[in-house]
Length: 497
Image (cartoon, rainbow, N blue to C red; front, side, top):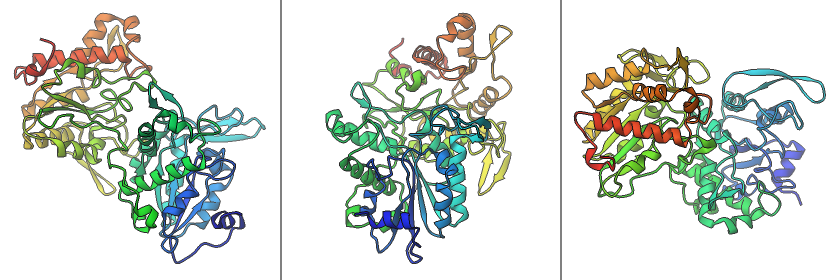
C-alpha cells in the first residue's frame, strides 16, 4: 500500500493550507522507490498536526535534470508562504555533461555555462552545480518559503578504517552556495560519516545490501534521524515541529558539520591556525592529494607542551572567516597565553557582486567600507586588525603571515603579491605592532632556488594547493619565520632548535 505522502504526490492533491509543508528535493538517496532513501522515514520524526512532509526526491536525478525534467517546477508550483524545502544533490551531478546519461553539471559554483550537444542531438545550456542550487534557493525564497541546503549522503567506501566523506567537491560546493545565499546549511556528509565511523565498517556494510550508495530501510531511517539531528544542530525552526520520536533525537554538535579540531589538553597553551585551504585543505586529510601547511607543522612542535589546532577552512577569506561562525568559535576557546597564526588572501579578491562576492573583501588595509545588503563589507586589512585586536583582548598573541605564493612563474621567478595582500598584511602587522612572517617572500625564494621542475612536484593542482611534500616545505618555512622573529614567541615549544 502506498503511503499517504506517495498518494498525494502521484495524484497532485492540494496541500494543506493550515500547516507548513516540508518538501524534499533530491535523488535516490532521499527517494523511496526501488531504493530506500531518508525522505520517507523522516516524516515519522515530525508531528503531522504541525507540519506535512512531502518527498519529491527522484532516483537518478542530478540538480540539473531535476530542473530540466520539470520536477522542480512542479515542486515550486505547490510552494506556499511558510513552507520549507530540503535540498540535497551531488551523487548524480558528476561525469561528462554531454555523454550518457547526460546528467552531469559543470563543476563549481560560478556563473559559467556551456552550450553542449546532447546524445539525442538537442543543444542544451549547461550550468554549474552551484548555479542550479542557487536557482532552487531563489525560487523557494520568491514563494515566501524557506530553503535548507544539505550536503550529500555518505557512500559505503572505506580506506584505513575511515569512511569516504563526500563524493568529489559537492559537499563543499553545497556549503559555499548556502553561505553565499545566507540560507541554512547542514553538512549531512560529516554528520553521517561521524555516525558510520562510530558504528564501524562491518556494521555499516550491513546497511548497504545492494551497492555502496543506497541503504537498506534501517540505513534510511538512520540517515533520516541524522537529518533531524542536523536540523536541531543549526537550531532550525523545523525543530519546533517534531514528533515524540523527533524530540528524542540528540542535536548534532554545531561544529560537527565542519569537523574542526579542538585543543587536546586544557592545561596547555594552544596555537590556533586560521586561514584558507592553503593552511587546511578539506578535513586536513589530503583530499585529492592536496595538503595545507597547517597539518605537517604539528610534527614540528612539542605537543606535550602546546596544542596545535588547525582551524583554517578551505574556501574562506578574511571576511567570511570573520562573519561566519569560524572566528567566533576560535575566540570562544582562546585563553591567556595562547597564540593565533593567521594567513588569508587567496579568497579575498573578486567583485562583491560576482559568483564569489560573498567572500570578497575590499582591497587595502584602511577603513573604507561598502554596504552590501545588510552587511557592511570592510577592507582585507580591517579584518586582519579585528583578529589581532580581539586575540589580544583574550590575552593571546597574534602572529600575522602573508599568503603563500601560487605556482606562477614570471621572468624565471615565482610571482609575488607585493602590491596587494602581502603588502596589506605587512601594513596591518606594522600598525598593530604584531609579529609578522612574510611567507609570500620566504616561500617564493625557496621555489626560485628549486626551479620549475622540482616545484611542480610540490603542487597537487595547477598552481594553488600543495602536495604533502609542498605542505611540509611550507611548514618548515613557517617555523623558520617564527624562529627569525625578534620576540621568538614560540621558540620554547619547537622541536626544531
